[in-house]
Amino acid sequence: MFSLDTAQAQGQNPPGIKLDHYECYRLSSAKPFKQQKVKLTDQFGTSAAVVVREQFLCAPVSKNGGEVINKQDHLVCYVVTGGKNAGKKVEIVNQFGKAILQLGDTVQLCVPSLKKVL
Image 1 (spheres, rainbow, N blue to C red):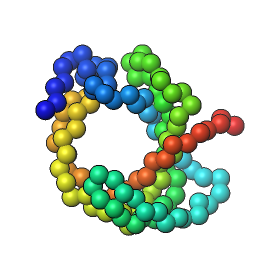
Image 2 (cartoon, rainbow, N blue to C red):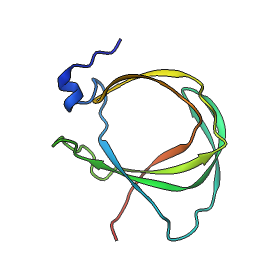
Image 3 (cartoon, rainbow, N blue to C red):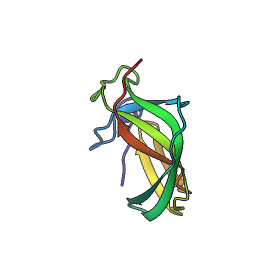
Image 4 (cartoon, helix red, strand yellow):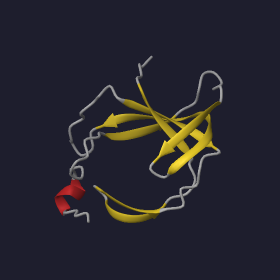
């Protein structure tokens, strides 16, 4: 189904993928985060979850000299509780190879974000 040659493993995204790479940094908040309930629907189903706190800021990064497509697009990832357990196996393919992985509980929600360095 997927093919991954050595050149792809060293730098290129799999065919059809147009996302940047992201480097994620741990966060500590200057003020307490107000927990929020969310309804999440993805290819594995629907669940109600609680967004608990900020955990990571993920910034687009150049890996091994690669191009950054959207320098302004960041992700903030939040700890989530009460989500679903997908309970599925998936096959992934990316620059590090191919793997069969078992999905477990929902633990994070990452949302597109803008950031300004202070």
